[in-house]
Image (cartoon, rainbow over all chains, first blue to last red; front, side, top):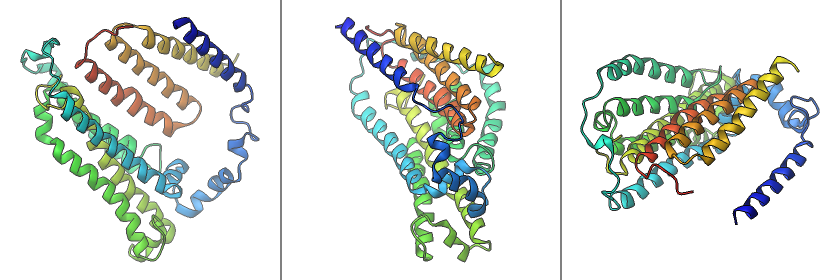
Length: 252
Length: 83
């Protein structure tokens, strides 16, 4: 059986390598990615339409805002699903066969905790920078949210999970994840109420004292903040449940 | 061969090695750490190709948080894989 699997894998690998030579040269002007009229439109008009220097963010949060909104929903659902599965199965199937060293209660290490104490403000500030500068430089809600969530995970790793849960309980995390999606969809709905289409941020210029282009610029920051809320809290909720099989006590 | 092509080749070879190791190794903790290394090499490759946003996401999600998730899971299952 293993030999058959190996043969199939090798065959498919060879097929993929054979197909790979049909790819255009990287960065070639005539490659489909560069030659398509859509790319030309984005490259030429993103700065004019939205005043956003980072094209990637403009495509992600504005031109394809609907797509990104449901990406955020997917993250939310993934978090909910992991928690639901672990709460049901993890707590029951508690086999005593697996003994962990961490079951012995140990004092948090002095050096580790003090290093983390110094690091966490820097990490969180960087997360805010990545989030706020998402439309100027690489970054945005997803990356900033993950970095922010990682800082909470770091608290749980350096001390223990209860200390991190004191700062952000799983229930509150899930609630805030929903708030993030509400922020995103709310901005979309609000622009609909102002006479545009769903997620047509330009209409926000009716209430903001800025031009239609700058309204799109600022609304993009708004939806990125929504994404960051969801990603931060879902990352932490997933970690808290994964590391304790849904029991939320002890920890690694 | 220019410096950049050499750099790419170096990273690609290391990526293949990391991928094979993380699949073949018996100890699951080693596998998750090597998988994190694979993600980080992938991130370097994205950055080199000019896709900085993708590289950033790969560094944060792939090499950072998902490696932590894998390690957290390994601590709650048996350490060694059966095959």
